Image 1 (cartoon, rainbow, N blue to C red):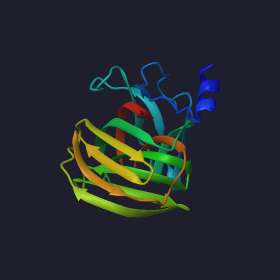
Image 2: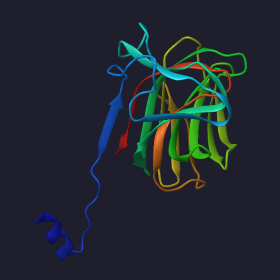
Image 3: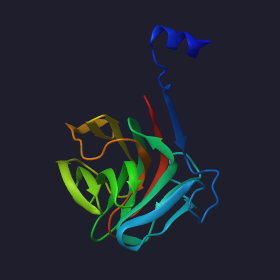
Length: 205
């Protein structure tokens, strides 16, 4: 009846707002979470696995990347968002080349997606678009990122607009149109970064 009335009035139904948080606490340690796919943009041997961590923001488990690769990623491919948000708590643990933790959205495949990351080695926040396997910088801003400490990274995206927030402070706010349309969401690291993730959230506002 509601749909019929809307059609008569010439109106369209819109998708309702929703949000979901995944804390990995019901997942089997030692494996990639159910419904997630792990891989790498470029080369390398990343290792994504759920494991127990007494410091986890929501105990007992986290998702940890402890291998190496050009750009390791782990995504929920059953999610398809064009506009919305993605957020994660992350703790950079070690890395000689990088100490990074990031989120991806509008992920089409291993070589095409947006990524925002924070880096404890460089103390900055950066925004990139990755197309055909090549990562291009859109903007980076100095920001305090402590090693062995939990941080919260959040990205809100709508059409061309992208806003990146770290620990409650907005560092990047711009428009970009390199990657459009719906895609998956997930998390990301770089090189030899060993990083733990918890409380992964995504949704449509």
